[in-house]
Length: 384
Image 1: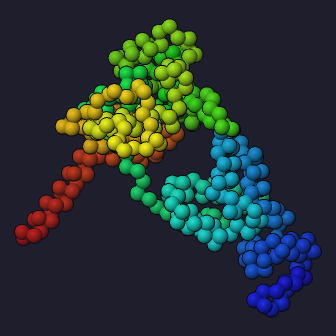
Image 2 (image 1 turned 120 degrees about the horizontal axis):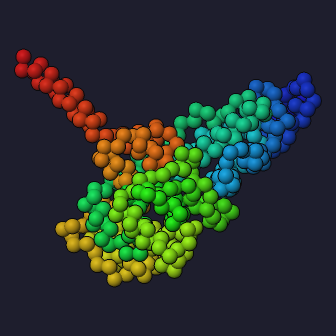
Image 3 (image 1 turned 45 degrees about the vertical axis):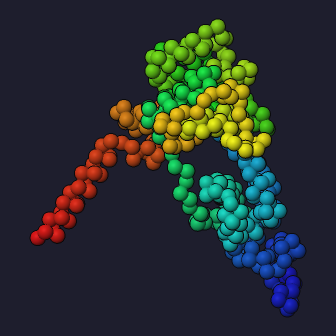
């Protein structure tokens, strides 16, 4: 029997197994009687020995037990645990209840976390608790079925060839071939910046590696997924430019480097090159008037004149929109979704269809024709 006071009155809970009573007493001491009773109720009256282990400790063990993942992924999970999951880390596993998870989601939402961020963190939390349920530590996964905030998402930008030409006209010459590869072959940034002369084949580029971050350091490893290993056809003119770029370099040297010859980091390129270029393509100065010291413009961009206002872009693409642009060009050229999936290295055709299926000309034509028939019927009914 475990004695405790709740709402000013003494109460007690009886257990048939002494070990269960000791575990419940620990929960009462750690969480208070009310929360301990909620945990007991969620655990169907049986508190497993693992249920009192702190969630953070169990999550770290779960991360170490994972198979088929890269060290970079483990590091990301540890980072997630130390960041937005920290409020749950000290709680016993059994105390991470469905109600507490909903409260945690609402806090993230109020704090301004994006729906995608919340989904990613909740997905990791759910995987840990599913592991606990499989091991019999808790009766079920309390994260299953949690309603998450839904956002509109960032709208994809698909550049036309004419818009891309405007953008490319203000990209520094040193980076024009890299930007062209991104827009016409559709590799991920981490894949494109890992290309070497050895990856150039007859009429194509081989994508078989990518930059990864582990323990705060970048290194080259396998690409994102199994299907990310691929050979992507490229235009003859682009192959010629790539071979000119590779001339005189070792076969394992990087094709695309910074002006000083180092690895082109996404964060630096985005802030110091890409954002100024997009401003120039929009008819603005590379560095806005009155901008603070946090607005950076790389030396290779300085001196490039803005695009005339009558040719300026009305959209502001992100670097990743070049990958979306490549997909749209492939579809416009008549490639089916399976071919686009292969070129982009998507693990599932569902991903390709969800993102780009609406671009298929036959789908648009069929929808237009169907709506025309419905309107014709409606019009005929009105006139009769």
